[in-house]
Image 1 (tube, rainbow, N blue to C red):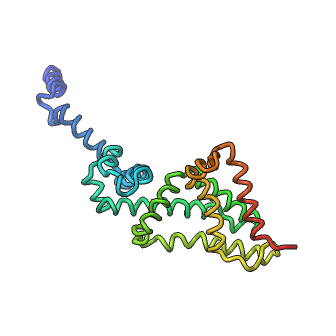
Image 2: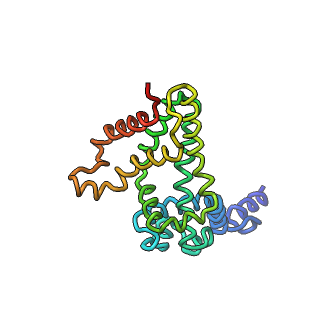
Image 3: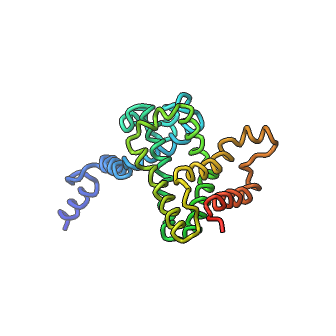
Length: 241
């Protein structure tokens, strides 16, 4: 009994035991926990989210990779590892923001709705997205200033954006077949009309407000403008009786 007690005591004191010291076990546990917590895909998503804010606020030239790295608890080296360069990160941001709006449009499943209600849902979504996603509006403006120099290098850009045209084409075709819509409306022209009306009230709000003393993106005008734009689009596509 005494020998057993001594052995047990030795193990308890860490003298005769084969187990590593407590400090070593604690350090290893921390390293294991850190490895579990590190998620490369989540890290990239975090970088893109912060970079979206930085580029939309400062533009490509004014944005600082150091600031993005600091806000994401990463390093410039890691950002360059994932995206290659500052321009590569900017292109990835553009790909993401356009991809987001196109994916959400598909989630509307307007092909399952009556053509008029489907068109209404698409216009309302477009209005709401531009109204809420101010970073998207600013980034589109910035890239237009750049002459689409960077977004045209994104291989998936054209293919991803054609989905909204297909959606509109389907709505128009079904509306024509049902005797609800005109047969002479071009899908790309209609997309231009919808985007222009929704984009302008946000993208040009500062100059418009200075000129006329009214901020078109003010919350108290939101419902009225939303209804106005929906009505304008539906009046444009409806077949005359």
